[in-house]
Structures are given as C-alpha cells and as structure tokens.
Image (tube, rainbow, N blue to C red):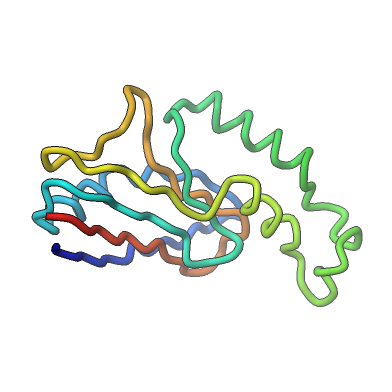
Length: 138
C-alpha cells in the first residue's frame, strides 16, 4: 500500500469564508499516483472546517446566516472562552461543520456524488492555516 501526504495552506483575510478545495485535492490525488484507496482531508486548526456539499452561492449565504444564528460572534462577552479572545463562536461553528472528510478513490478519481465538492470553511481568519490531505491505497 502507498501513502501520500500534502498540506494545503490558506490565509483568509476576512473572518469567514468557504473555499472550494476540490481542484487542489484532485491535484494531490494525481501527484500521489494512487488509483484505488481513500483520501482524508482535515482542517489542522480548531477554528476551521472541511466538509462536502454543493458549490452554490445561495447555499453558502444560507450557511453564513444559519451558523451566525446558532453561534453568533457578538456580543463576544457571552462566551467564557472569550476572556482575552474573540473566537469562541468559531470553535462552535467548526464543531457544527465538521473537522474532516473521507472520500473513496476509484479508478484514479475522487468518488464524489453529482454535485459534491470539498470545502475549507474558515471561521476565524486573518492568519495562515492548513488542511492535511492524506491518501492511502494502491
């Protein structure tokens, strides 16, 4: 069995963003030479997420509104974690959206559904963060 590891780096200037990382993950798969196996993509930071869904701007807008209702950023004093910080909401948003995804590799391609794409979700931007891409298989 072969193994491949790559880090994808992001520096989102704003507080939040959803970035389609499917093309970068496909590049990693191509570089790995693996034809059958599994690919793991996970956020290496506790205020960021990796998830699979549709790449549709209305859905991303709806996520923004929904997440802000569930874990509003302000007032920051509402969170005990925010003593000296202001990102408690980002931790909660990450918990909701998830840490990682695992995708099957079949015949050298990501085995995704018709509309599925892989996304990096940033909830506390302004600094460099990374996503681990780990591929195993033959």
